[in-house]
Amino acid sequence: MKEFFSKYIALRKHNAQVAIKKAKRSKMCYAFLAPFAILFFAFYVLPVITSIYFSFTYYNILESPRFIGLNNYINLILQDDVFLIGVKNTFMIAVITGPLGYIASFLFAWLINELPRWIRSVAVIIFYAPSIAGTCYMIFSMFFRGDAYGIVNNKLMEIGIIDTPIMWLITPKYMLPVCMLVILWMSLGTGFLSFVAGLQGIDRSQYEAGYMDGIKNRWQELWYITLPGMRPMLMFGAVMSITQSFGVCDVTMQLCGYPSTDYAARTIVTHLFDYGYTRFDMGYACAIATILFLMMILCNKAIQSLLRRVGT
Amino acid sequence: MSKKIKEVKEKEYHKKLIKRRKPNRSIAGDILLYIFLAFVAFIMAVPIIYAVSNALKPLDELFKFPPRLLPLNPTTDNFSDLFVTMGKSWVSFTRYLFNTVFITFVGTAGHLLVASMGAFVLAKYEFPGAPLFFKIVTVAMMFTGYVTAIPNYLILNKLGWIDTYWAIIIPAIASPMGLFLMKQFMEGLPTSLIEAAKIDGATEWRVFRQIVLPNVKPAWMTLIIFSVQRLWNDPAATFIYSEEKKTLVYAMSQIQGGGIARTGQGAAVMVVMMVVPISIFIFSESQILETMASSGLKD
Image (cartoon, rainbow over all chains, first blue to last red; front, side):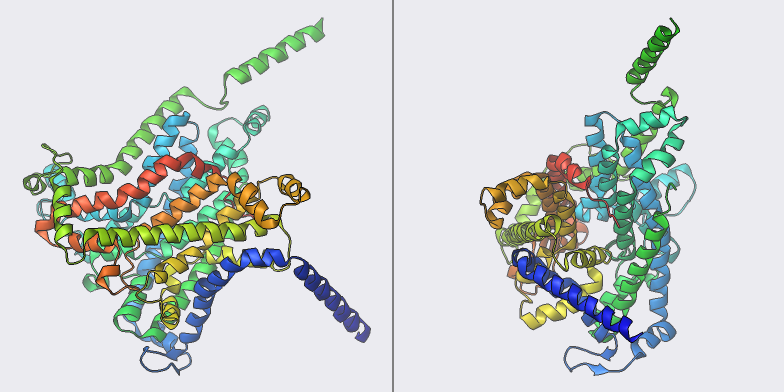
């Protein structure tokens, strides 16, 4: 046993020495990477670590942080009803718009794949435009205006489904569905582009080979040839759409107000803003951020292991 | 004899295959598909069309009953009103414009340079720590900026960068998405190209500047559009207090929030804000798609 350990340590030592030697020889590489690495650690890695640290403290910027253990988390889960509403809303939005947006991204990318080149370009622009149109989603507050001047109310009254205008963005019952609709409209984003490009990259001869092997229709072709060939893009798209659907806040804040009626459109991120920027309870806000961080990472890992099984 | 027939048959089969470039497709299915796609595309475009048409409506049409999708007498009054309002603001319109353009330009240029330098060595060299670093970058793509918003504020505060342009520019330079896309794209670059240059005695910096950078132009466009889209739409209200350093989006959203009388101008604001990213995308669409082809997450 002792011998084994000493051998193991010797091996480790040797490996480390080799690594150091290699590192010395590739100084140039580190020099190239350094500018990005320093900024990346300062503004992406360090914040996560400080966020976890501050989540165990009471910190209001004016006084220095005071260690209070798990109190922030206990308060969040046991006493903060508004946070639980936020979690529920975020999950509702993520569970509904996340997969739907993801499937829609893939479906449309797949459907426009066979169009002639210039029509495809136009289609890509039309589908992708909403997600980069800045504050264009604000137009939905005109669609869903609470009085008869709103287009949706107007049309519904014309057909006779309703006889008084519905206050879409103030009634808690309708707030989340309207937001989901808007988020879905914007959901053909980076993942969609990745799918379009990935589909173009699949070798045509594979389809012909599949045809010879007895693939009968486009659905079989999709499952047996297209999807397995697209797995890396599917992973990338999944990361994008999970990240987006957990980080929802702009749409709900702009459309339903902040704070919204009965907190019906509160999400985890708006709760975070509320405590961080309005009440300056940084410790508490960091606890919320840490929970959100863990949720995103876990969800991503789960989805990735699921996607590994596609088409096998 | 029989051999010959077989050959002919095979040739016919080939011909058929070449003629029908898409096996497994029925005409009826194709037509249904086109109709469906046109319908969805129309629905996707309606809000944008409505936003543009609202900006072209004269004030009385904006409040007309019943509401109409398209304007009857399109005017550009809203846009000229917008410029009048902006001209009357305490900080001049050109200052807001300068702020946004400065932040967008410096942030994007910095991001492009720093990310492609990092991506170059990650893609083309092997050195200890590289795979680990890249893994951390891909994990960083999995959480949004909101998770890091508050500690970022504290860090920027410590550095004394709050209320300067750097508070927005510097974090944007290290955006993990850009490095990821650039690295994936550079991996497709033939290594022999770099080796040949090295044999000719070029230094790494020269290889990077004269061989790698000109060959990854499609990836530039992609990084540019993601970065511009992010910086152009950044209201930056939490990091910048002084009015004269605020961005165009912030100033515009103030106008948008100006109540009923500003409805027309608000609509014009929307159009102005979306025109820039969308038109960049239209011009660079094919290059962006070329980059995205290598965007897959391999594990």
